[in-house]
Image (cartoon, rainbow, N blue to C red; front, side):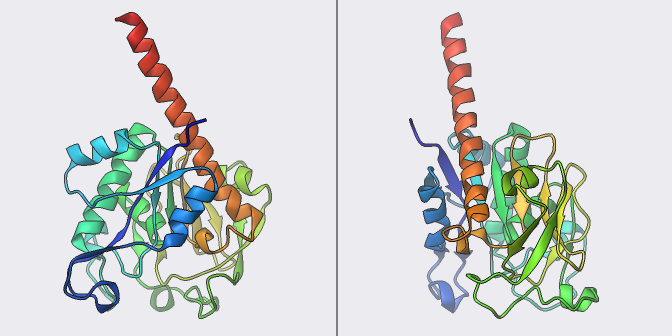
Length: 260
């Protein structure tokens, strides 16, 4: 059985981050994202940060699924109609342009996509949603979402909506997750639904009910999948959906060939 190809978005240093190559423009991606895809049955491929719709469409046509990874920096608030109110590092223009663009293309093409932490936020903004720029400043909550604990440790539970894709994957209503974010979804994009929340009401998962697999989670399953069966199933569900995408393309191509 051929393994499905999963495109993975990297972070990008334009030349101003000492933690990612200094002045040399550099792609950056934690290996654990790639391992999670590989170990659950896919072939991970790092995507270049291309800048126009024709290129995004071509990339999406050559992969069977997409993983939008987390980020240590924030989307520019202007991208969701706000001015910047809190001083945090901004995501590079190159990465933001690519992630928002490819999320729209993947949604339109019904290509399986999983967004993790900042990746979930990118998916939401791409389809018309907004974000809380800083949870601690904008929400009154005793829960520390930017936990100082290692991401290999869980910090709180999330409650998962019945009937959702995430509920079918998890197989239960409440799961333990890690937490390493200071932003979160505020207004959910029109074509998406919130399908998990933290105990304080912060949105922890979104998905598109009209797509085969279009899911974002606010936690970091790539730190937990090798010890938590539920987090493993999150990646393996993406791989299964990507395999169906690949099979569907093959069937359509075969059907077209039989008519010519």
